[in-house]
Length: 140
Length: 489
Image (cartoon, rainbow over all chains, first blue to last red; front, side, top):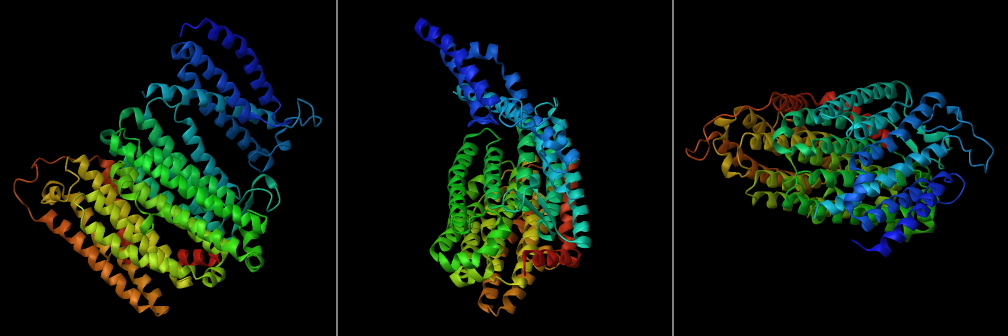
């Protein structure tokens, strides 16, 4: 894996991919895409890093314990937000009743709890992709 | 009060999500058991509430019917969440002791997490009144099942799991295709709305509706292992750890049966089924399954494999009751499902106890077993009596009700078929019981191993349940009648 060309190009690409992934996650309530697609892009960035620099290097910046907690934590955040909605507004995942400001439609900071859900999904999907990648490499 | 059903689903989800955070895996097992008991309690409260003030319709997110997901909490769905939750708790108590020796330590966390997801899917399938939601939950249930089969990391488990995965994905796709065809002609996914729109849709697009029924029936036939589609079942039930096999045969297959009932009577309606003649397909499959399943079971040398093939035959009984498309038939079917879940679950737990006591999973090794493991042999005897249908067990009442329902419809030939199949049951179960009492020296190690207290406790509870239902079926019959009324008869 001592390929200088590969390493340089991956290093150049990574920031762009990560920023694009974050962009897709954060604009989930406004544009096509959202937490799942954005999270998949973020996960791909990590997988690309792992492919170029080896699994040990990728485990160093993103250890398995982190991905384990992010995976559960992402869904946990959604369930907690949903439960807040259930107890405050009467419906699981009710939006306006939770008190998160709805903002003007079309703005980045709008949509109540939807951006929060998108971030949670993004974290979950990204870390799951990494877990799957690691699991596939390990079981050889 | 009304959102209690949501709390049930969320509780299961929370157990699954918290499982990586709780460090000694033992705590996960206790947490799952606690949640199962709490959810069973909630179901009991809901059942009482429904009795006094009617079914609850829950529109998730407050969207109007047809736009969002709808949960229908009525006498039918709550009866089964109550029963399956209670049975699940008992099996989970068993698993507390069983896991130590049979599931690798590294997998304990995964076991409770997967179990929680499995129960989440089962409860969801029972409550949901939305076809697409049904499909999603079927997928969740089958993935959790596959993972539970392969939780013991051995080659034959992986083989069985992969086989089940491929076959059941085919079944899920078949169901999805049926749903798509229904959506095409009715324009909605809500079961109640589809039921209202169905007569017109059937008059205008009979081919679509027929195909939809065929695809969905085919998919669920694979999932419930109705005879020609049972190929995945013996390997899966035999290779999975016994507590998982008990869950698979007692809970998962019953959940799919409930989905089949819902789709037949709440989506298509019995009039359309009768018009298409689908009940004759069901009768044929049922008759073949009842005889062939028992014949296969006769030829087995492994105890768990024999139980697995006997499940194939029992699904035939359920299908026979369903094919009557009548109130009496459905009542018989629901009682049969409850009785079979209890008995077959118990027998798989017995198989697990034998292997805990270092007795091999072969019918030969069981000879004289009553001297080494008297309690387990007693449970085996009662369970086998129940399967055959000896009076005093719930199995007798179940077969009796089924025969009465068939007699009402004057299908006497099928009553004879039930008797024939029961005789076959007796032919393969009685030698096991007799063998266990008759001692053949030299075949059994003479040292006694004590079972963990949790395993004894859970098997005793099931034993009492089987005998109690055998003597006073009137404990559950009123609830079953209410459930059948809720389905729409």
